[in-house]
Length: 436
Image (cartoon, rainbow, N blue to C red; front, side, top):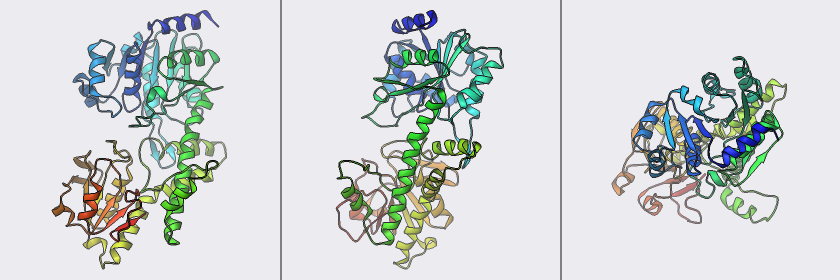
């Protein structure tokens, strides 16, 4: 072990290293606060002025960070956030947690990573450890980030150390908060891996080193590709079961009684959030550049992408039996977020359903206890109140997101027809209920 590594580990143990987190979103802010809880001083970099204003006012905008926790971190002098990258000159460790969206359906956008790294490379002190957490394609750390540092005359192992450690946060999952999720680490060199392991071991229960940054990058993509493919499979099975007049939910429940060789996945109106809709496509894109086409990823992605349209087709079929067309029907979409009990609209299939229905000239309203209004894309709606009178106005109620706080008994009692895409009314036999 080099003298630098030994000294770094000693300083980590004594909480003498200062940590910076670039990007204070659903990954970065919880990470920053977790380090603060473990006694570290943390600097935050965020370019969104609204987020910085909220932090300054002790108001959390992330479900996994309570405003009280944020206030305590700031009041204790352990957490300071701003938009000026020059403060990174104080940091011993820099974690990059910026967005990685898609330019088009099959083309990744790593401009946020590049911009962050360019700014970081101009504002570092010697010996800093830089960790990328943003999900990206294999090779990004070595092929994209390393050359940016080297273009400034900086040398890995002398001026800085670089590694990749994929974020694995599941927003709103109380069973598996950040500290309980093992941290995969892949450095450009064994020393970089050891350094990152020393710092992450202070906030998580287990550190999992791998042989390279490229392997660590692919770990996250494998995890989410596994989910994408299985969700696409079960969505297709649900469509098949409907055609064959079978109950897919009953079939899944019976199948999962097998104590080995089966893991239950459930169909739904589509997949939203930060990971499943896009992460596997990063792997698909990179594989194409190596002359390999992943048929599984593309097929599963297409099935899931088409689910909101399939839901609308089913709604049309349901209404047609009552002599109604989309243009002369009133439809209520219950739940707007991509996931139950989470105030997050990113890529929510409920929004796609509303958008498609509006384009078909349906009179659409929505109810979501977490989202008071929707002003996104072509949607500009205010949430209705869930009253007997209001429910009586709709020809069909579509359950798109199954929030726990919704009174589903009241909904069933006062609705004329319900299309249940989440199996809320499991084991309830009622002619008003039609399941996905």
